[in-house]
Structure formats: C-alpha cells, structure tokens
Length: 205
Image (cartoon, helix red, strand yellow):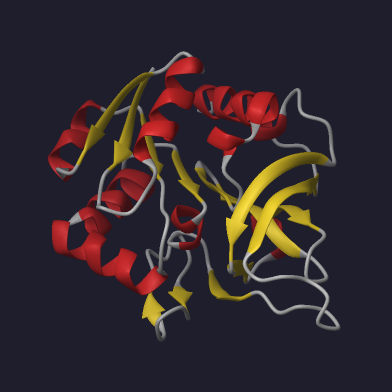
C-alpha cells in the first residue's frame, strides 16, 4: 500500500512516516502535488496554526490537489491533529480562514468548563466511538490516545462525528465523511492502539 505524506512545512513527518512503515505501508513524503498520481492513500499531518497551514497548502497548490484526490478520485485521506482541522470549511485560529471544506464544520478554540481544564490539551485521553466504523476495528471503546491541541472541530452534521473525548465538556476527536477521515489525536504517538488505527486506515476502500 502506497501512502503519500504531504509536506507543506508544518508537521512531524518523521514520526508519522515511521508509524505507517510499521503498519506495513510503502511511504513517501512529498512537497509536490503531482506526486499524488502514485499514491493509494493520502495523509495530511499538521502542527501549528490553521491560518498558516492553509496559506502553505494554497501556496504549493495542495488545496486543489487534495480536493481533487478526495472528491473526484476517491482517494482515502487521513488528517492528523491540525491536518484533521484543515478538513473543515472554516477555522478561527489566526482569524477566520477558509479550510479545505471536505467535511462541513468549523474549528474553534477549546474552552475550559468552570476554568478547570488546561489549554492546550496535552496528554492521553479517552476516545469514545459513536458507532461502528472500520477505522476502529480491534480497538476498544474508551481507549486512550495522545493529544496536543488548543482548537477542536465542530462538524455541522452529527453523522460526521465518529468519536468524542471527555475534555472541556466534550469535543469531537474523530471525524469522517466517506473515505475522508481525521483524528484530533496523534495515532503515531498512541502506542498499539494508534498503530492499529493506521493499519485499519490502510484497509479502507
């Protein structure tokens, strides 16, 4: 299975690559959208601010290429952390910025409940699946995954919220629409459960 990891200057690419290689994929990292012709899976990682990331994607032509791959070619896409947020229609970090629009929704800042939670949300936390999905095969509901974020994705449609996590009340930690998927947590840093999720992604058709 050939996996292309998008290099737009904002992401921990080495750890994502190692994790997918451990999952059994043939991985290549590219900063050239034309390389997508050789990909069977597309991974959009990300660390940083929504606005800056979208600017970088547009500058390199990745925004149009990702939409083409996902909407017309049916290529499975996995967004990780900021990469998941970029799948939304709009983000508010650094001012309102148009996202890729692959999953209807907005990205807004986490707000503590009664001032108790720390922002950014860093560390291990439970992920509760909202229903069966092949991405979760072999993973128990309530399994801990590793998070580092200050913003969260609010989907317009409940069916696109595949999992939630109890923090700041609760937030959506996995989104999905067809073969376009996103995890707010870092599967590449989430031990055996994260590896299993990546293996499941490789099997999605």
